[in-house]
Image 1 (cartoon, helix red, strand yellow):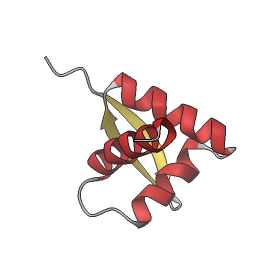
Image 2 (image 1 turned 180 degrees about the vertical axis):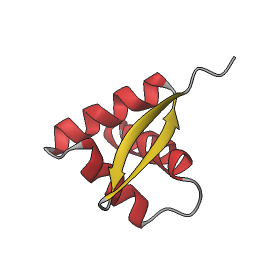
Image 3 (image 1 turned 90 degrees about the vertical axis):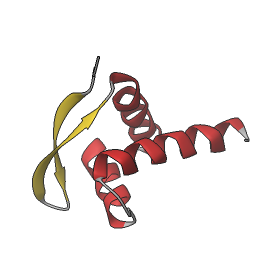
Image 4 (image 1 turned 30 degrees about the horizontal axis):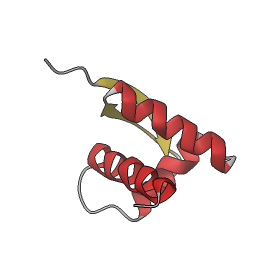
Length: 72
């Protein structure tokens, strides 16, 4: 079963959508809150350095951020 959900976002001024599992979206919004930026701003930052799809880049970013905060 695929429990991803599409989210409409604005990346560098352009509307698009990304498909993420709820846990990744929740963590992404929490990271944005902790950094004091909007989710769109955070996704635009991720977009500037990504290699693969935007959804995959967001997932990698979330995992890396969690690992960094956990000291792993």
